[in-house]
Image (cartoon, rainbow, N blue to C red; front, side, top):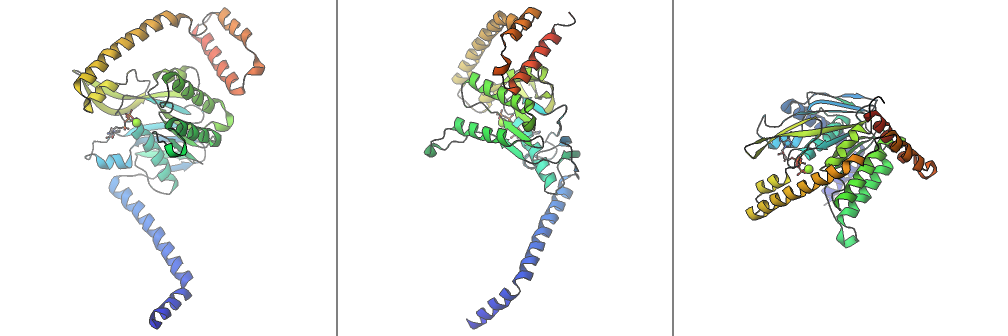
Length: 333
Ligand SMILES: Nc1ncnc2c1ncn2[C@@H]1O[C@H](COP(=O)(O)OP(=O)(O)OP(=O)(O)O)[C@@H](O)[C@H]1O
Ligand SMILES: [Mg+2]
């Protein structure tokens, strides 16, 4: 026992040296691991810059890439910039790779900022002050919080803390409520991030609300992206390639069939889907004529009805963008 006490005393005496060595070894361990992963997995050195831009060529998800056979992961590019492509709206069928793409961008930025090489062909990363990721639906029933409530609380936190240097990833917000409530909330969030000078964060927004892709024509810094799929003899083939533009279909029913839903359920869903879509087409045909102001008189009417004092600056800016677009859409009259 006295031997042990002696040993403790000696260790205690050299405590500072031992801690310093342990810390140095820890750091060396991290750096050696960064180097090993970079060398064995084909990572590159990212270029870090001050301006709020992100330009990634051939980016990959470091973990999904490992789970797939070599060469099966499809690399994708990303361009986000405060001036042109501040908000990217990503649509694409279920299972096409939206969540993977969002996380890949987040991980590349995170790796770059902790001093690692990144899984890409090359990457320019504008230093990010905060990275927000809002996904999935968790609830805390015992604490009186439903999943939709949690989703909105987290969204509120993001909107309160985002800055023009932040990076935000929204994976399908607004899904936990009725379609129109969800769509309305999702759009209002995008308008806020676009128009509020304090919250103008670079944002990736994955969604199944295809209506949101209309914003590309209204808000100048919103750009659409979608993920390609091919349909061959009724079979879906997932290409996982992210390209400009918007998706037109979700293929949710086909994906449900792949997941093994009973055949009668899939069949019935197909029937219902056809009905819903036909109904919507009729509806759109009837109402689209007066959906947005098209004649100068209508635009003037809308301006007349407007009470500037009742508008928030964000609403006013959105309204301006819309009226300007309506005028432009009419061509040179
Ligand atoms: N770039 C890619 N290359 C190869 N495989 C990919 C790629 N991206 C995604 N995948 C594969 O597709 C699967 C589904 O991807 P993910 O979960 O991102 O789809 P999703 O579009 O978010 O679907 P949902 O709309 O249902 O949420 C992944 O588990 C992965 O196996
Ligand atoms: Mg997803």
